[in-house]
Length: 295
Picture 1 (cartoon, rainbow, N blue to C red):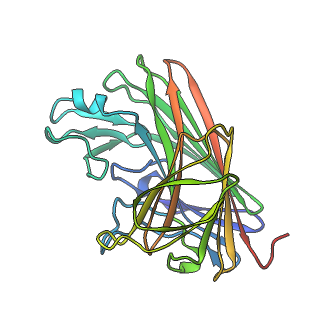
Picture 2 (picture 1 turned 120 degrees about the horizontal axis):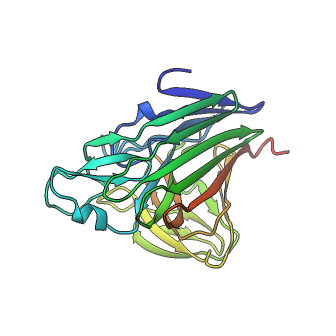
């Protein structure tokens, strides 16, 4: 194990996991980013890229927890700190509104990391700030062609905490640029709401059309999942003959996708609301495959 990375392996899959020391910014969860997944000669992930920069520094499978509103930030005095789950204590620099795209100075939470050949556990310790404290454990486990990622969140403070957790999936198979050769399929009739760009729509599947000229990206929300107790989506590429099945073992709160030439990023959101002392856990499973060698 390097200081900031480790490799988890099954008999078929290799997963490069970035540890907390590898990310110090204020957007993504510090308790592990999956940098790359390899199945034989195939790779499935890429990094965040906007123009000539790295955006907010995301890569691969980058997890994110957000509050439902900005109430904690709004009541924080300038130069004081406010908490963000998965990240740490962020410093409020001025009186402008909170922006997730902004880099705030961070005092990271402390972590306890446990590594096995096929699994990792990253435990984020609680820190009371603004009458809010939470404890998080994120577990990564590889078996066969599947990577399972579990999140456990406990409210350790005196106030109710509520928000959402999602994974910013930076998918790009074998480095193949994002275009209509990628097909994203669902187990229901999808109802899109476009923000920018175009998509090519089937009843239960979509491909990307033209990107928005100004941002060189596509962004949209999807509905149709309401009422389901769990969720799955399947992304395949006709050129690389590879795919991934993403299974969410929880009901979705919402679905959003942001995409450009570097990555196709479908995001599923899990809602949480915890009273003091309450905890919740949920799991995502990623099964990677080659269309030429599916068993």
